[in-house]
Image (tube, rainbow, N blue to C red):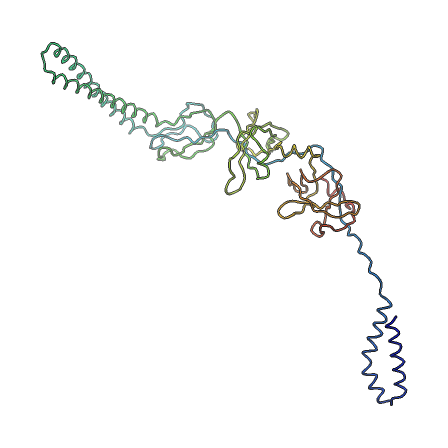
Length: 399
């Protein structure tokens, strides 16, 4: 009100000066005082009309109260059905393939001949080795007879001691030559036998790597044989799943090709290190009673009953919630939690075991009855007061 009084005094002084000044001076005076008159009037009006600002109302956010699923679903990962043992089959000698009796997908037995090389050269080597052995055997027989004669004559003092020693030396040399020729003959026979590729175990041919008429080197794969017997499911797991897994843990396996069936499996092998490219750990699980309809190469879904899942169930179970509620705190998944009676937002990190098209499964970080933000998670801030509202179409957020 002080500013209003000063303005009134100035106005009176202005009127008195107007009465006393000539008309032309009055015009110049009004022009110079016009900005000051407008400023005083605006200041007076502002001083009279100023009111305290009202606090902003809480922002409405779409939210829901979460409850556990009741049966915490295990973490599920893709896998492939494979034989526990699979080995490449190859010839042990060089040669040209002249016959193949097994083909891709064939079931073979142990000892079955799968392919043959041209044996002509190896037959000749074997015949030459046998001739050398026969000659060495003949020399051995002669050396033995000569030794018997010289020994008897030496005892009768009919020959010199030096002659007996020479006969003994010739006999020892004949024995060594005979043994060497015998081993060479045995080796030639083995090489001739190696021209036949024989299955070491019963199984299924899963790959063909060479064809009839092709020249192959020793050790070059011709077939890939998957052994009969135990069947594995091989899966590559991320870092957050490998820590809670141990050899002997159980799992449930489902095959998309055989809907409605579940197979029990046991963790048999865990990779000691991550794959340098994918940064995942390979896990091998042995199927129990797979059945004849489980074929190698089928895709599988492995539900691991890991200790992390058990811990989550002990804390109240897993929570399946809409994927729109997912936010991130740094690199970790997080959710906006509506706290207390004041409805203050808190950002909380959670553990997610499964990502689906419309939902996620949270194993740690949530409690039964807590309220989370469903939409607009990128527009709110920590500590902000909100007004929770229910979804307009709740069925859109059903799992």
